[in-house]
Image (cartoon, rainbow, N blue to C red; front, side):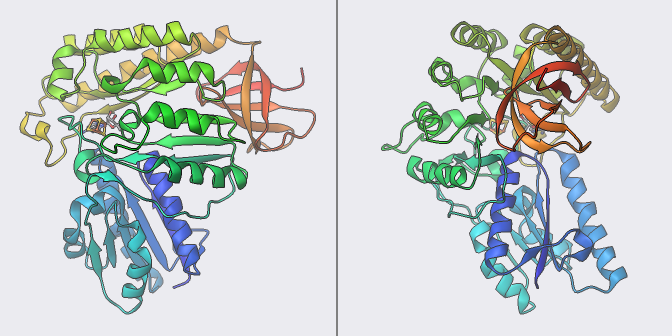
Amino acid sequence: MRSYYIHTYGCQMNGYDSERIAATLESAGMFSAASPDEAELVILNTCSVREKPQHKVESHVGKLRQNQINAGLPLKIGIMGCVAQQEGDNFLKRFPYVDFVLGTDNIDMLPYALNEIASGKRLSETAMYGDGKFHILPFERKDSVSAYVTIMKGCDNFCSYCVVPYVRGREKSRSQREILDEVKRAVHSGVKEIVLLGQNVNSYGKGIPDETGFAGLLRSVAETDGVCRVRFVTSHPKDFSEEIVRIMAYHPNICPCIHMPLQSGSDEILKKMNRGYTYSGYRDKIVAAKEILPDILFSSDFILGFPGETDEDFEHTFDAVREIEYEMIFAFKYSVRPGTKAELFKDNVPDEVKTARLQRLIEAQERIISKRYEKMIGAKLRVLADGVSKRGGNVYTGRTEHNRVMNFRSDSPVKQGLIVDVRLTEVKRNSLYGELNK
Ligand code: 5AD
Ligand code: SF4
């Protein structure tokens, strides 16, 4: 087995895990295939947060099998990530042509799994670490201007709809030393932007007496030589404190945007979701943050059609989106997850109502964004350049401090990793356009 291909579903943490998986496979002498059809090993790094991604995995496995038969190839298939964690052995039983299943805490077992499957065995391992600390072994990164760094994983919040506490386990944090070493290594290999990852970053260090909390970690990362930008996801509204915003205000290299999911604007629904805050408590935190750092913008996730969500509940969500004026929203139709508390509630909002609410929310958000950016035409935005755009020629691409894609013209070459001030000239649905030299 020499060539591999990894399909990544879901969140940034899976993206980070896929980088670790790739690095492990390369240390074992394998190389990345240009397409799954050319690979001898295909790994699906899966997501189970909503039903749809889970279905996708199941149909994907079936397709891989079909291709394998058609091409007569000796393909090996591995399932990793959250569906693997949830299904474990079950997956081996249901899909006899799957060779291994490794859970979210078992990436380091990959070399062992490769040995086993090379001798024709099949295996499944989903054991999880306990609470407290966890470690990630150093790994080689691909060239990039931006790097994810996982700082904590798991979640102790048990929102009633969410499968994460079951598939990623209890909250566990890496030591600050291990994280800063990884940041320094990333910077050394050319990375300019560090994205700190955790299901609930504000809980970083909880339960580890000799660790600083998230605020201390954020400060240390921002002060590390060569770190030009820092972002972090995800913040839980219940644990979010002004201390973080003060550190952001003091360190201009921390991007002034925070992903802090509201999920619903209705207090009734928030209670049923077990979110631990009310809409007014959430809004007060945002108002206080804006007093400290006026440029700060927020992004949020929303679930539409949670059990019992009435038209009135939805109107509260709709009003919240208009009031907060988010920089970005991610909206999802509610989907029942096995083993969660909400599985016991009746999923009683019809699918077409969920769809209609989803569309209304997204349209409202699009209006807010086009208004915000139309007003900014002519202004200069700080962009971290990421090389020549797909259009080629003298058009470059990069990301603004608020993580929007900006395509911009420049008369002279713009090196990847440079931060430049780009004048905004045009606003389109998914990206911004600008000029560097005029
Ligand atoms: N149904 C729909 N959306 C969900 N999310 C989490 N669980 C569910 C579910 N059962 C959404 C939440 C979360 C995001 C990552 O996925 O909005 O913030
Ligand atoms: Fe899931 Fe809630 Fe934890 Fe987020 S905070 S991962 S939504 S349980």
